[in-house]
Image (cartoon, rainbow, N blue to C red; front, side, top):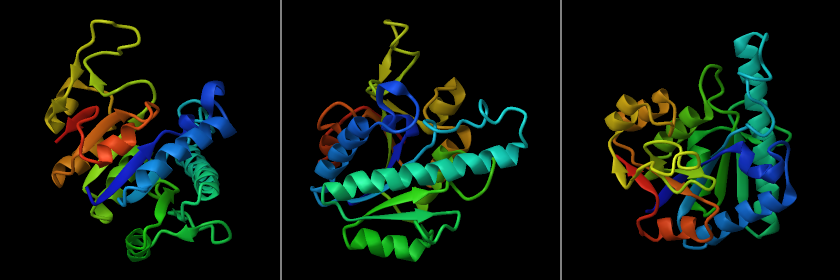
Length: 232
């Protein structure tokens, strides 16, 4: 792999509390990314906002587009937090936002993002797609295609791939080593939303679902080892 896009959930930054930002959890996540980055792979990141805002929950009763914009702003908060954690570990990082916030982040410009990656910087994309009604999963698929990533890495917490059912509640759930895009869509497996899967399928962009909090998993993935579930 030469260039990858890593999709992170906002809850990863919250730790056991599940909300807000926990410095220990954020540091542990940054350490995994820093170790993987040392392998020389060009790395971009899209981070969600579930630790701050979920439109379907907190946005109930609001205009749906407005609720989505609040969520997009929260992703920029997480992007800046992750940037700080990475730079404390000596990882050169840039945040680009689809919603212009020139005091804290660069505007998203594809050619500038590519240049940062070529210079060895980690690029964190905030602000989702910049449009309501699209998830950060779709933003991850879109940015991965724009930067010509080799793969989308869907990070999970304590789930080491895609299962036929929730393995935490059903011990008989079957883990899949590989799946096709259509199998994900037809079986309704909760990996990414349908729009994101369809985008990846349209360009045959592989997806790998893996547990990022198993130490070394991200590094093993980037070295070419089989980890988690591969979709393609």
